[in-house]
Amino acid sequence: MSSITIALISAGCIFGGVLLGMFLKSRLPEHHLSNESKETVKLGAGMLATLSALILGLLVSSAKSTFDTMNAEVVQAAAKLIYLDRVLAGYGPETGPAREVLRQTVAARVQMIWPEDRKNTGAGLAAFERANSLETFQLKLRELTPANDLQRQMLQQAQQLCSDMQQARWLAIEQTQAALPVPFLVVVLFWLTALHMSFGLFAPRNATVIAVLLLCAVSVSGAIFLILEMSHPLSGFIKVSSAPMLKALEHLGQ
Image 1 (spheres, rainbow, N blue to C red):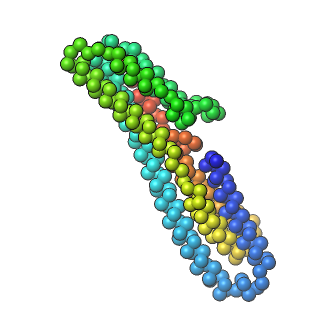
Image 2 (image 1 turned 135 degrees about the vertical axis):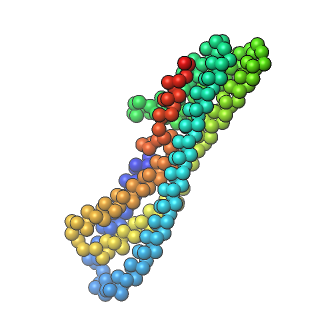
Image 3 (image 1 turned 60 degrees about the horizontal axis):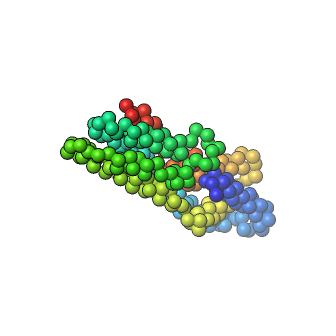
């Protein structure tokens, strides 16, 4: 289930709590809506609001940390690609085919993760996981035969950089597999629904109040949407920027 679908379901449940509270207000006996009852409900709502705000704040912070980490890894990978290309250029003209394979590999991966056609279901992380173009590049490196110590040292350096990028690739793939546990999400959604039900229980019935409570429900579900999106920074609507990789692509082969 996509993050936007979960966010829309969350908004429906939370605003449904508002409507349920308003419905109960018209059905409960008068003494259930006394000032004493109202104060008790406010205490419970305050506790739920504190718990919900704390959990949502921690989740947003954690998701943002995941997003920033992946963004830093993309920048680092782009820098390593440029450096790898420079090392191969210093090796000699015989690395021309390997450098061309490297450029094609980077171009293909940029298209996989940041496709121009967003409706292309064959692209994305699934295609990125199946791709083995970096292995092809490594085979090209193994075909090189160093003629002196300097070339041998440069080849070893290039192979080490390639191994580092392979490790980073699988790390990125594994990091995208983590998902927010469904029971955890259900509990948080229950807290938010109960909290908004208490709002509707004592809120007057007019268009302004309903519009404000609807906006609150959408805003809270927006926080859930951000958490889910930033937890998977290489897929969905909110992705890390492709600018570092595109800049690296400009320098490769030159």
